[in-house]
Image 1 (cartoon, rainbow, N blue to C red):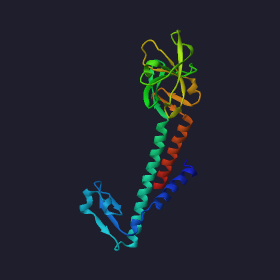
Image 2: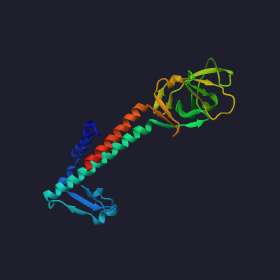
Image 3: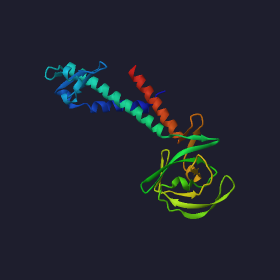
Image 4: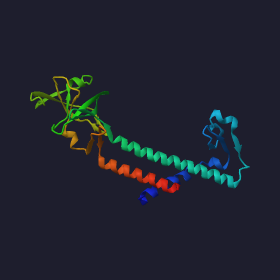
Length: 245
């Protein structure tokens, strides 16, 4: 069922089309036929693509009030259609921004994380680890960054070994749609080969809502918001279909 709010949005867009109607239609109208066979109206010859200028027609004082009204209606319909398409694209972009592709490594999920310090950036793959209290990077992966790590204690890694930890502050860490400014994280000297560059811990994960879609290998950030946007898109598309009938 289409909501009243969505219908209101639809008619607001139509009204915007009316407001945006160029005054040039009242003085001079130029139209040409494009390669799809569509009649395109513009208000200045400079807006006619060179390939079509040989076949354009200019009308001014001879345009009848009836024809002018018809052309204005065509303009309004085209403008409102473009605005509807743009609104749907904006919804699609907002939904896409809340999805992040991930890689699977056994039963582990690896998510891309971007780290920036003093104008230098490193792209890492971090394991989602709800058992880690802090985010931990492997020092080797951050070799390009001018880090200044300070000793912070010791931690036990998955192998059972106890390693020394270091703490440093970055300018920025980006994870999906989230950007952490001036965050602090831990660094360890990791021994052994692994396809990941550290652990994304609960210092970040407890602050966000997310769902892992194992079928599509994606993390859906703020799934409640994603569901709202998808519902909004469905209602808007349904409202457009209803108005066009």
